[in-house]
Length: 364
Ligand code: M6R
Picture: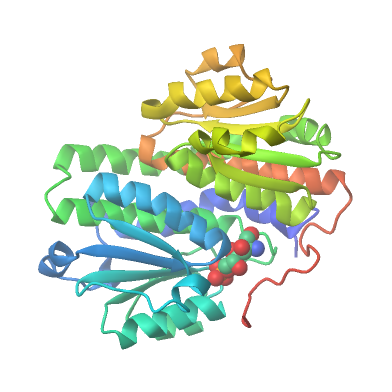
């Protein structure tokens, strides 16, 4: 049932090109985004005053990416909330605030309760969910399914990628309705989205190289992931992927925050994984890389083809193909998932069933 792969996790990573296609294709019609199941009128979309995303774990991380995308593309303010925090603090929702819950399983107790509360407050709720007919899908007013198929490995991979696609589509739709995305720009974004599956395929072709690299870090004690903007969002996920299956202590920081405390933890050969795909903050991240390197860090950089100058400051580089700046996380996550996977394999761990974790957290 693992289809010839050693673990479900690596099988599911290989399914990502298909997952992206399956989540994307049914919602693209005549060079336009058409999310039938959304069932929102243009007036309703224009009236959205704010978006509130509630989720846990990796699903929360896709929400962090979505915040950057929605705010920039559709100019709608976004708050991203950890569901277990939202539900216990008497949250304030605006009248026209759209609440989006994200969940692979559709059974996460805190996320489900957050949706119930939002509905009780009279807000429109939309669930981005993978499991058809799951509790969260039933609780929310509207559902947008991520067509990733069953995900077995506790560490999520393909569902995460599908959630990103769902968010891109929503942001594009909202931006178009609100008059912020012209026809040509829409076409070019859609073209870039359609290229993602083959670009992911290309990145998967490099897995042996990543395995070799990962084997050098099986004894690492601490790892830091850094990035700015969308690159920060992917750092959160890269860090969780590594720690949950390799049991290596790992943290993600907005790169600019390092010098407010964390940089004192950098020692000789501490691994710092720096994600630098965003042109507007590239130079800033590079200068953070230099600061870490000066203190002895070993730098792994994840950047876009064309940024070869980064080799002057990084010890090891993983390149991703060119795409629109909004979509880089869909590519940058692949080497980071592979890295986490191969470190865990290198340590001989039960990759699909990490200790203390359950695939769906149905109790608080
Ligand atoms: O089923 P959900 O998407 O609601 O689950 C949320 C988290 O429990 C989940 O993403 C968790 O963080 C994963 N183990 C991460 O790989």
